[in-house]
Amino acid sequence: MRDPFLIKGAFRGPCSICGTQDDLTVDHVPPKGATRVAAMEMRELWARLSTGEQARRFELSQDGVKFRTLCRLCNNVRLGANADPELVALCNHADTILKTKLILPPSFSARVRPMRVLRAIAGHLLATQSGRQPAGPFELGMVSFFLNTAEAPPRELECFYWPYPYSDQVILRDVGMTRLGHGRAPLVFKLLKFYPLAFMLTWARDEQAWDFLMPNLAIHRRISNDDFATVPIDLRSVPHQRWPEAPTDDAALLSGGTPMHATPRTPKKRK
Image (cartoon, rainbow, N blue to C red; front, top):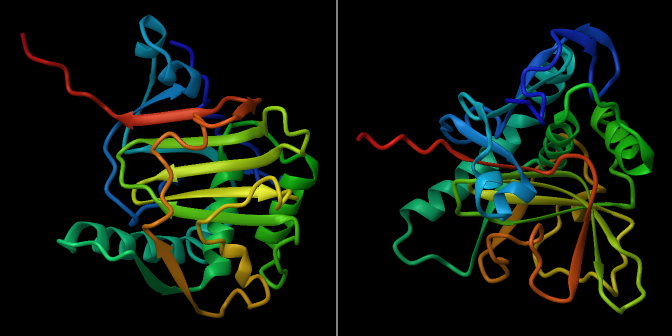
């Protein structure tokens, strides 16, 4: 079976973030420590949303979704040691609330370093798709922000997030959404969804056309990489499970690349 996501990838080549020619290491989504993930069945998103034979085709990835795309410095230090611990802390706090509260509050919060969380999200999205190098203002802005921890995120970059209490994962790296008949600029975004949170990076968002109720990590852009802040998690503005990859209003999705959907492997039934 072909590997549309190049899960294994080359053992040596240019790092998908910094471009350094080096031995390549495996990036895990979600990062280790955030949640325990079993073998995942990875499909192109369009196959997952369809029915029949196409929906049954998948690529198996043991121990969760992963891509061999990053040099050791980007994967183990910049992402694994410096950024991921804050993303893991945020996810684990959300997991505790969602699993232990008999009656969920309308919202709750976590004390984390939001710029490190934002760098982790940018790094994991840039790590998808083996052999691909960052291109265009959106991705080059993400790279510059990720590599330079003294740098604030570009003013065009925002990161909306919301609770995602589902076991599947969605990764969209090249996607836009337009409102039919509105004549406004499309929303350009990248999407990373895994239990217990979903993250959507947007670029140069038209605020009048695309007004979201969920919190935005980028409001903390003026604080440093080392500063803590109280990050809210709002349960009152949670979209349906398949938003935004399957919009239900007057929006249409425009996608390039290979949008990915992964679900825990279904055990074979014994005959």
